[in-house]
Image (cartoon, rainbow, N blue to C red; front, top):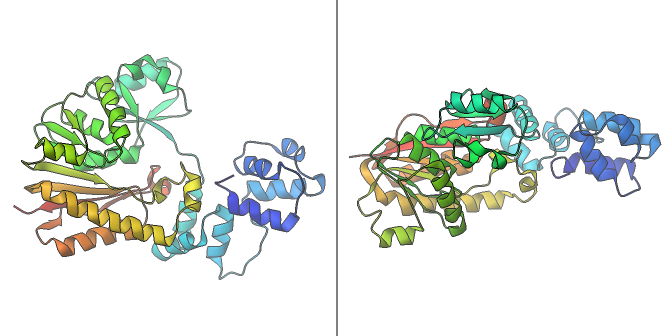
Length: 360
């Protein structure tokens, strides 16, 4: 119902229906989870057939002129009008339609092999023997896409740390960061630690991976996951704790800032989030992202690499943040071009990745 909110409400205005099941039945129709016969059991018979056809085709009740594409898209795909206009200005009409459609689909179920314990082929063979439909991801050499969701937490191989659940785009952020054995790698906004664990695996338990987050409960989760994964080169704590223990005093070789953001690249997983976002909130995120860059970048060694990433599709949180940071810090320069991942292009969540080099 969150995913298809505006489309359903548009038909409510048109039909003025009675009954408590209209929204739920309409949402099921939009998702293809109920057939026409089942739909008629919940909807007034006189309008059921017309409504079912419209919802399954995502056709709004309102009719607009040809120059009002943004309004059509807003209703058809159920996205805030300001956000649709923002994307149309950046991506154009055709690609915005593709993007909105992809964000209304359910995200694929993607796993990541843990190279500290097993390679991708080995994990895939295990899952295939267990009757799961799996295939290799196209971008990440460690990713495994499952045809259907299953309870991985009951899997003996998951309990032994052979694989994790991780979106392919999230994997690509760490692969783009390129952590190397023997380095000091800091995941400054680690959260539950999916990227931290992958960095430790790519470093083959050599060197040190530092994980920090303002949410200390997430770091407790990371410690349990690291133990299961066999990752022994991870040190975690708040930034204050790490500074007190002088874990950052020598500087780090690579700094990953997966910054808190609006999450517009993950709206297929969190459709309720789009109704909480405003243009003012985007500005607040941008200010916080710049502050994090300012606060954490001094801990990067000369010659070190800063990787800035978000799961946002907004230029205000991505290109503009990096542009503002570089204007203030001439000792940093770009290392290669920015990378962007999109659900409609790449099948991943939406991500932005920029790599900056701190000049020697």
